[in-house]
Length: 370
Image 1 (spheres, one colour):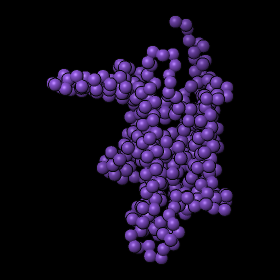
Image 2 (cartoon, one colour):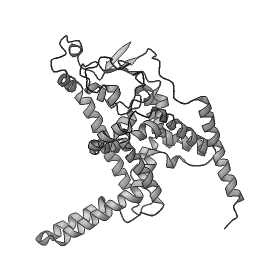
Image 3 (cartoon, one colour):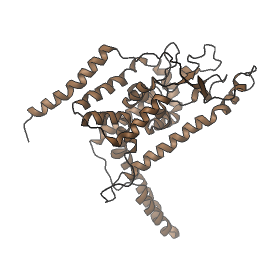
Image 4 (tube, helix red, strand yellow):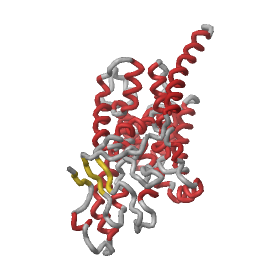
């Protein structure tokens, strides 16, 4: 049994005359899905930024808003916290829901809801004139780096089992929150506060209204103070590297490094939602076939689709000139390319992940008390 989703009417697909404005028909056929994805990205990015602002203390003992929502949606953070604490944490039930939905829909979270992924897409759009040159300069896609994300995932798991919390330096939400807290937000706050002071001092007859508006902005949109410090430079550097890697390949972090993406990729291997055709069309009339323009490089070197890498961006559907591409739910099991990580590399990674915390703890025990 197969159910066809994200596709147009059969008359469009089976039309004998595909040369009659196929790109326009294909775009109108799929435009809502691409815009639905973009709308979801913007909505969840704004939600993330709003919750980030509401994280600041207002003097009360508790915060009214669910400021840790995105961390509770994070299966990687949930797994590491449960392993590290050796306790089943009920507060992470949203992460379990995301994981279950990933088994059904694939890596929808990466393409539709992840705020860091949305910011990377925005950075790619802003840097597009530059990335067109740098991507050609970087040459072929470094598919050999694909196992790195699984190595980082296994290392984080090994560290967590023995009580060394390293996930905070690898989780995308932790990196984003730390970089915003220590550098980006303080810099924007200082700049905005200076601009508001300048405007308020030169408002003339509108001085009272401008001062009231300035007070509202300071109270509800700006931070309470300068929180930048030297140790935050590590977070800023890591965040800057993630965005700079967009100059090498699009969504480089998501493709090759993100441990949350690796966690979801493992679950997405069993999704019944399949792209058809499974293999890129050999006689595609497009100037750049979908296997070359895919933002996640979700194709093997033989041009076979990899569901564990697809983030359901819907670009391949909207851009298909022949309206052939669609996604289907299918009970039939389709062969999925194996994970690009050898057994020897996996065992070595686990060994390092388990040994490192022991070495660190031994060094702490031997250190004299101060």
